[in-house]
Length: 145
Length: 145
DNA sequence: AAAATAAAAGAGTTTTTCGTCTTTTATTAA
DNA sequence: TTAATAAAAGACGAAAAACTCTTTTATTTT
Ligand code: FES
Ligand code: FES
Image (tube, rainbow over all chains, first blue to last red; front, top):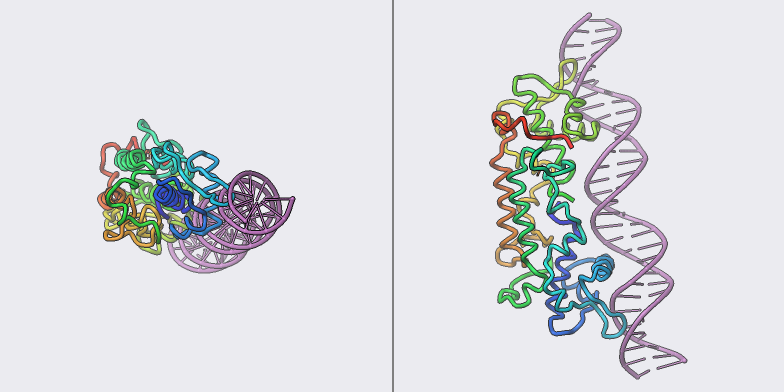
């Protein structure tokens, strides 16, 4: 079990992929995305339909259609993708599964766990979907298994 | 979805509970543990059977039987419980689901993610099962939902 | 207008996780 | 030595997550 659900992993990898491939205004089809990030095509389609409905990615049907992102989308933090797919629990939930993570009624690991959880939150809030489009190390980053 | 599976959450809460309740040499029954940590009794039974087989907790059948821990057990790090239940992936796996987290072929979030993942690893390796038995704030920690 | 293209939508199946219930085995105490 | 106790084991069942396949709708190009 990872930190994110598989659905969420595919979602993150796909938004990075789409951002990269459509920075020049082009669109990219589902088959190409699925190959590019090593994910089951039809399963990814469902995920992108959802992200499209939520306005996180844009899509167009028909010839020359496909998925793409607008300027606003590129500036969105990754945390929005994660929250859209997996919900807020990763950001606010108790590590030991208590109903409410609480400062006044904490589980044994609360303080240490919260610090770590907040670092993940900060990372996802500070990293935008388009973040790696301009970064020099984009070439060495990997999205396929 | 949490960081740990539900099974693992129950496992962690139960070892803390058993450690606390049996520090004086007593044993504690499954019903009491299940109530004490708010978990489904028979499901927890399966989990504890497994932890017992692995030597993480001890158990005894019959009257005055129940679960308990020896001195060695109290000194075991929580990471052993987590690894026994959820495996190593939380400690070594890629955040974006790539087959192998790699320094030379990293995913976009690799460096930042690895740092966070290692902090969780350190926390779980440095916290022993018996850690909160002697701590003054044991009374204010919570294991029930 | 017709054909081609590509996403959207619908309707599944499979697998894994989570949870329940019943029976068996081991131990202790009367 | 029988009854009571409590974990171990076995066999299910429900729900969620992961994945597949088919049909429909929208768009473009010829
Ligand atoms: S109460 Fe458990 S992490 Fe806050
Ligand atoms: S490659 Fe993704 S976390 Fe290391």
